[in-house]
Length: 435
Image (tube, rainbow, N blue to C red):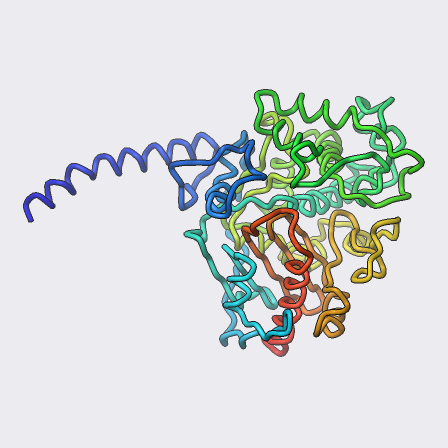
C-alpha cells in the first residue's frame, strides 16, 4: 500500500505539469476553457485525407491545434439556453436495405461521434462517442461553408456587401485577368462559377488534395492563393451554366467577406453572432494568416451544442432572442432556392441540390420510405461536410439535427447520405407533438 501511495505522489507533479502545459497552449490560442479531451499525440494534417477512422477521431477533435487559428469568443455573454424536452424521445425507426433500424443502429452505421437533436429549442437527444465531450471542439469540414453563407447575409444586411450580384473582383481586385474575373458572388455561393476544380478526395493529384497540402505547409496563404488564382475556366462553360462543387471558390467567398468587412471570418462571427445569440463556448477558425486570413472553405471548430445554437439561429430566420433580425428578410429563402444549373438536378433532387452553400438532401427515390421522407426533405436544408458532418434544419417543425461522424472514406457511397435523410425523417415523425 505504501508503494502505491508513493507512486501516486510521484506521478501527481507529472499530471499537474501536463495539465498546466495544456492550459498554456489553450491560452496561447485565445481559449478561455481548454477543450477535452486534449490529446497528447496528434496526426499529421497533410495526411488528413488518408487518416484511418481511429486517427480521424483524434484529428477532427484537435484540428484547431493542427493549423494556425483565430479564436472567436462568447465575450462573457449568458449562453442561449437549451433546456431538455420533458419526455424521452420516442425511438425513431427507419428502413434501410430492407431492414428496420433504430437509433443505436444509426449511431453505429454512421460512425457517429456526436449527435444532437433539438425540437423547439429543447434538447431531445444528445450523444457523445469516441471519447468526445460537451467541451470538444470538433471540426466542421464543409459545414463551415454554410456558416460563411450566413455571415455573407449579415454583411449584406449591414450594407458592407452591396449584393450577391456584384463581381467578385469588386472586393478581390487581385483576381482581375484570372478565370474568376466575370464571376459574381452569387455564382461563387452557388458553385456555378464555371472555373475548373477537381474536388475528388481520393485523388492525391486533385485540386482539393493540393489545397490540403497547402494548408499544412509553411506558407499556406501564398500557396492557396496561387492554386486558386491560376485555375482555368471550363471550356465552353460560362458563369451560371454548370454546378460543380468547388472548395477553392468557397475560400474566395470567405475572402470577399473579409475584404468587405475589414476583418477575419472569426472576428466577424464573434462580434455579430457568437457573442450576441449567445453561444456557450469559444471556438476556433482555421487561419491561413493568423489575424488576417481565415479558411472560408472549411475550418470552423466548435462544440456540439454551439453547432446546435447556430442552427437554431438559422431556423428562426436569423433573429436574436430579442427579436432583432441580423439577416435580410429573404436571405434564407434565397439561400435555399436551389440552382437548376446543369449538374445540380438529380433524381433525388428534381429541383436542384445546392443553394448559397446549403444543400437539399433526400434519399434515392427507389428506396423504401423515400416518398414519405421527401415530404420532410422539402421542408429541410442541410449543411454537409465530408466524413459525415451535418447540420439539418427543418424550420417549419423547428427541428434541428447536428451530427459528427468519421466515415471510413470521404468519397463515400450515396447510401450514407440516404440514411441521414431517412433517419432525420424518422426523428421528425417521432417528435411530432413534442413541446
